[in-house]
Image (cartoon, rainbow, N blue to C red; front, side):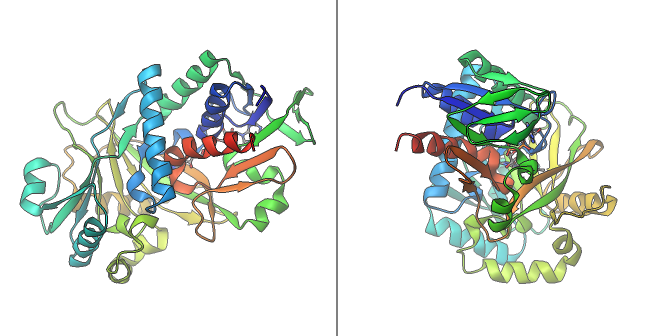
Length: 373
Ligand SMILES: Cc1cc2nc3c(=O)[nH]c(=O)nc-3n(C[C@H](O)[C@H](O)[C@H](O)COP(=O)(O)OP(=O)(O)OC[C@H]3O[C@@H](n4cnc5c(N)ncnc54)[C@H](O)[C@@H]3O)c2cc1C
């Protein structure tokens, strides 16, 4: 296909991965970003590339492709990443059953007895530990620095990025920006994160997508030599991602957790701990849904997250250096990514929920390939 003019709204991870992929395919690419730099979900997340959260089949393949692409770009652009895998720790009998069922049904995972877990991962809390599942694919990047580095990389490839340039109107073959300029396109990709509803709101409503707000924290740097050794999660997380839904014991685990931890259930709390190059730990999260959420963070939610963390991890220094909220759009009907074509030559990419860092390279490839057909 000949070179086309590709216009992208939004310089978050979805906009940038589409830009790099389109540029690599030989297109002329321009990104229009409302803010002075990307400030949305893409710099507010854990930075975990998370195939273990994805359903087996095409979605896991897409996630593995995402990890591979991030590693390639990280090598080319000097982006820090840590490929030490993930450790899912089980404390309740039902959680241990889920991990055994999951490990038996799928290759590539290592089931570890409690003693072995503690030997390999001194930061794992041994109190009540049944065992753990190690998965080698999961990788951590540091989103607040990785996203600007990805933008620089896109620019080096020849992508034009206009920051401080909100798009206010979409026409059939051009968009208007707030400063009165018009940008023409052959293909438009709308990757406006939580603001997708500004464009084609009826199509978005019909697709049953809702905003979800999450609370997050980052600790101070841990003492020199402290190494979590992998991304840590535990019982609560096994009920959160699609990958474990097929395990017979997941429903039993969910019932038990909802009875034992009603406040965690109410706030949608499950806990991920990811360590970064500066020794800090990124911790979260919670899930609140709707268009009318009160603005403040809930201190009790942070306490629930920290309490649940200590059930599975021994952290030398739990002083919190920063707290923030992130918002993403999520499908009400369980889709992990939604692609809409509200009119010819316009693609809206949204609702990647908590997996956008992981899945967006694969989605970008699909979008750009679809223009050939
Ligand atoms: C707390 C949290 C934790 C997460 N953890 C993970 C994780 O560990 N792993 C993972 O894979 N995923 C994770 N995710 C999900 C992932 O971060 C998102 O799916 C992804 O960042 C969405 O990317 P995006 O580009 O659509 O959105 P955004 O990053 O929000 O980017 C959208 C951009 O569009 C711009 N924009 C909006 N309106 C306009 C306009 N009118 N004109 C121009 N520009 C506009 C915005 O300014 C913004 O920069 C997490 C998300 C959150 C919130």
